[in-house]
Length: 84
Image 1 (cartoon, rainbow, N blue to C red):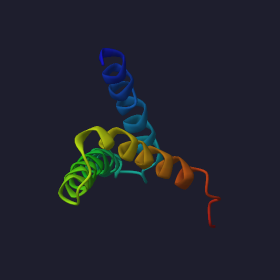
Image 2: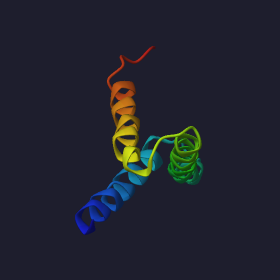
Image 3: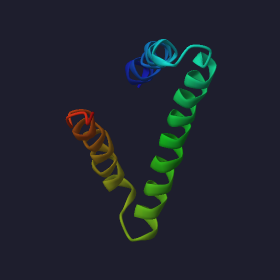
Image 4: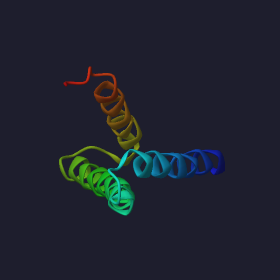
């Protein structure tokens, strides 16, 4: 659990730096706030989907495999080609 927490926390600073570097001139703080907002939105969606799964009849032990689908979906989105 410690390693998982360290790895999850280690993504925050590089992503924050990337968002601030990619933001238009003078809007670096907006980029930073959007990054943290995306993390908070992800937390809220994960909690909501977990609660939804429990209320629809899934048992607690089925949540980890269901939760693994979210990062897989994110990876699929990350590898979609960019539209220009």
